[in-house]
Length: 412
Image 1 (cartoon, rainbow, N blue to C red):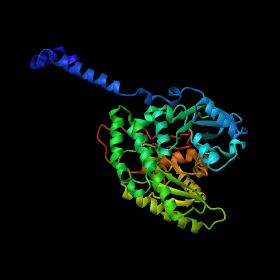
Image 2: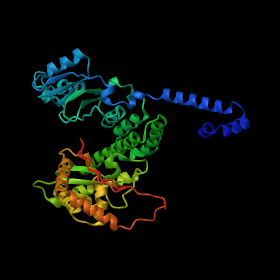
Image 3: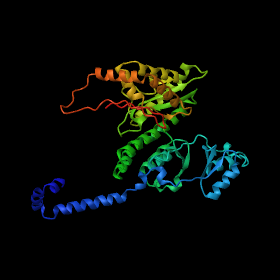
Image 4: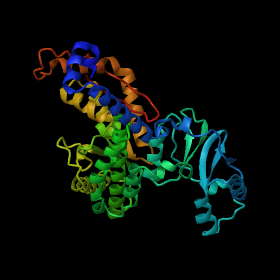
């Protein structure tokens, strides 16, 4: 059609063959389909949370009583109240907290609200897409997510009650269904429903980036459930630990066909290191085997929590990253491309943040040497033959510091 518009003689020949009004009818019909398609898309899903949610929230101070907090909730007709201390979010109290702990467990309503609040609260930034915020709510099974910017300033609260999208999207329903599943073997439905949900998002006009993040959310939810069931099987962990994913899963850029890239970081205090390692290797074995059975194949490169080289203490991981940064070896360059894209699935003691702080410390003192080593290894590596007209872009080293403290290596 564009060629016909650019070359009138060709349009004349084309229309004379098909009929004088064939091209016009074709363009009009497709225009109508496009308009209908736009009308089906809810553009609110594309908006940032800060643009879709009105600023403002109900809050109380940390030293207020439980009775005062409940009165504020009832007076303002809200299901949750944020607890503020020195201008920052300290915790969250929901109506469910009041019912489960004050009414059922006889916690005095005259006690400080600090005794009732949830202190480890998941939050979202106002710049996050609304649909992704809703996905987080579905994944974690929460009805309220405080909106807090990167500087710690509280903006508002995202509430499931105010979001009709939580009842409409098949993607959100899938995340909730994964969370409510009781046993790992009952997660067999995920792959098929994930394909359908992804197709639905595509048909609704979503770009690749939110779709790949949705797939990562769904896969994270599966790992969450499998890990929880594995912990129930092997018992309480002997020390602090983190379950971590790498590569595309670490970047939240997953497709429907993925394998496993995961590890465990543990931090013994007075416990025996090898006894702890034995426990975590068994935990990793159960998790990795369940994931394999569910359609997430074992990593051919062995990047899995059931392998000793991926089940190490925090000190051992720090030494490993130090060696990768300081030793000019092709294998180390490959490892840096995989392992530097790190993200925690479970990390109650923030071991990953501590590890990445160390990595940035090493890079700040050895960044020039590291880039030089990477460049030398890339130049020394024999690349496969490329098409004659192919012009590769320059290699890029990109250090990305954001709210998640991630580092990303991109070679193009």
